[in-house]
Length: 145
Image 1 (cartoon, helix red, strand yellow):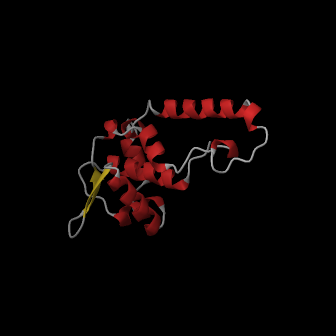
Image 2: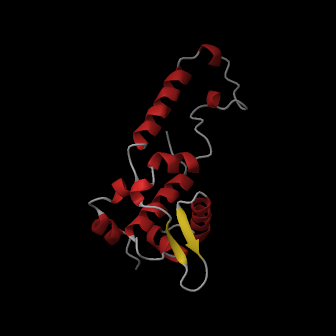
Image 3: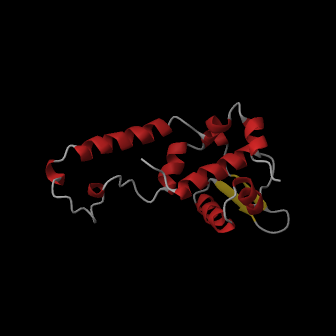
């Protein structure tokens, strides 16, 4: 299983915001910290704000903050909210499945079970878990030059 880049950036933005709990973070800070294009970060932030993970304030003194405690943000939820689909193989897509062995295939069942296990594992983690005991080290890695 591979997560798309949008999901990766979504998790990174949430981690950064969790590391700066009492600050308003700008798009520029995020783009510099992760060396990601402004366009990508804006799209991610817009998506996260629509889902109420992030609060966005515009204008002078504006910026971004988490809309909830890091401990309340489930990694599984963020992944499910950010991924377009979980079509690991063609037969998972009901509109694009042309596999002739699909009716008898055990692989589809095995991959479905693995996908569910993947998400179930992620349900045990929050944004807080990703930064716990690593806040100063992570902050040092994300210093803006």
